[in-house]
Length: 132
Image: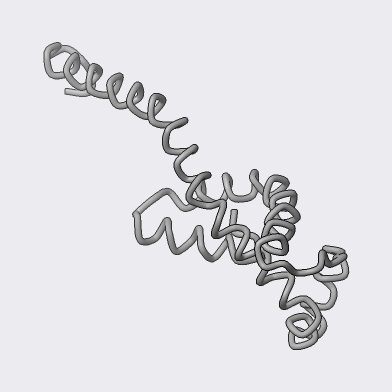
């Protein structure tokens, strides 16, 4: 959910590579969260502007996309501060989002782990079970 479009694919690839996660699932989740990322960019920009005391800038994602792919140097000249504000806002929000995801998914992951352990115990106890 990094607020710079195009970077999350690379970040997800690297995280999945380092953590030995399933690449297709990581990218599927990344793409599924795209609408949330777009709306999050606006919030991060505004939070970054508020924290730095900057005047709220008007920006258009379509224009930003066009300028980025036609003239990257012009993009950073015109929208560099906006991208910086988004990163600042994200840096402030990310720890809280991480904690929320951790505590929301922990019960689900514990239940899945418990079910997996029970299935493994049952498989070792039952010699006729197909997994043994």
